[in-house]
Image: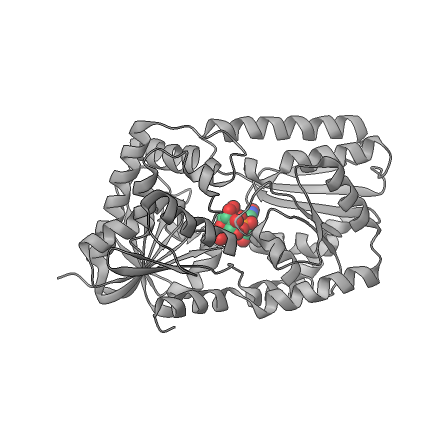
Length: 463
Ligand code: GDG
């Protein structure tokens, strides 16, 4: 019998990307993204296994061990990628769970592929997990896995964590085969969400859709009790603090500032290029501040890092075109030779460079229309050991519930973003410190280890 593991993570993606060097050598490097930043340290410390896709279509490579983890790659064909990943996951569920900020597309073949791929993930997890072991399933690509896994392995403890928002009942009700998706989640012993409201939406839905009788934070289903609670995710605070204290990173922050024009105040946006992140609204607000003269190209500069994401999906290509057109318009209208008001970077950066940008930024601008948590907000706060800098943060990011002294904005209201940007730019050192200190205390007291301990503790798994 093949080796089994007491603790297994199941997620759409493995925590590594395959890198092919010029000479054809293949290696693996840690992949960017919220889920990976969050989970890798935990699996490593449990010596556990991770089931997930490599990110490339084709046959699965052989399982391998790296960094104290056993990685079990899942193969996805080109059709699987089109239908399960880009289709049902990112074309249907993602926009619907983010309050319809884009119109979801509903296709029968996508749903079929989603079910087939979820079953394959569940089967691999069933094969890999030791008797009585724990499986932690992640995110919206795998909503059916908990029930499928329970059917195969009723002996396991199964946890599920949703990284994105869970929609209100009326929105969830729009999904074709909605009851099946809900039953999928109910296969878990513990369903974790970013916000208490999401857990309430879920429990309420079990009453409305399946006629169950939820009580407090749990519901009886199929002779078991399923608990639904909020576990707001966080970051590896020590990692960010270490980078922020690194003299090389600090020198890089000074270089960035000098390069952008010594005295200009630096506004920073860091997002996956995604329509949920409110990048267009942010640019619109910044453009209007330049137009009405509240700020000028001599005094401020915006650096917008837009990490490429889901670029085969049409909505993302269209978003990229719109964002780049707007950046071009603003730079064309307000720029000078050698001095642009927007520096737009459509690329993935190294962690050092990212933290250097956090240290250099006077104002971090985070304006998602909807966001499960938003780890960038917490990273910015963790990096600012000088208690300086200002955070403009959308009320619709999960992080807003914990970072209450940020300059909170309604990202749908461009006037409100303009107000918050102007206020943040005007905040003096004392006000910046007054706002930053409680946020730093909050993030430092609730890091990623605590999140994992809380979740796994509630699942009954010793950490
Ligand atoms: C989902 C939910 C939830 C970004 N650009 C680069 C880079 N990043 C890193 C950031 C941060 C992570 O990626 C992004 O996390 P977010 O939370 O901001 O956003 P999503 O990717 O949408 O994550 C979200 C999260 O899951 C966790 O539950 O908070 O709501 O949507 O860590 O630093 N990292 C590197 N280069 C980049 O260019 N190395």
